[in-house]
Image (tube, rainbow, N blue to C red; front, side):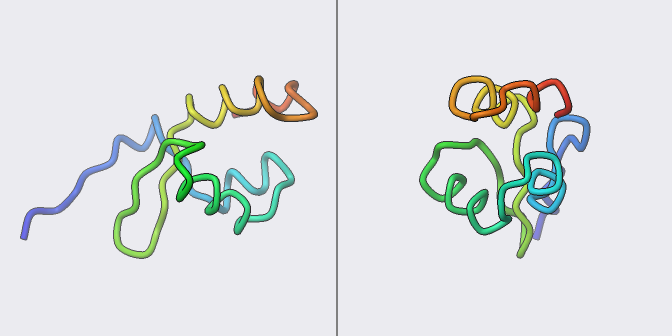
Length: 70
């Protein structure tokens, strides 16, 4: 079975996204499942595309300044 490689510079884990944004990890997972955020699931872990999180924070968040942190 081929191993899936993720360009780590382009992605962050849900745990990191939750810490940066202040949103609960389950809420971030829900956004990924709905397709609101772009990401990839590898095994049990979700990897969120940084640019997707940044864009979502700028457009939807009550605190778009957080987008500069991602």
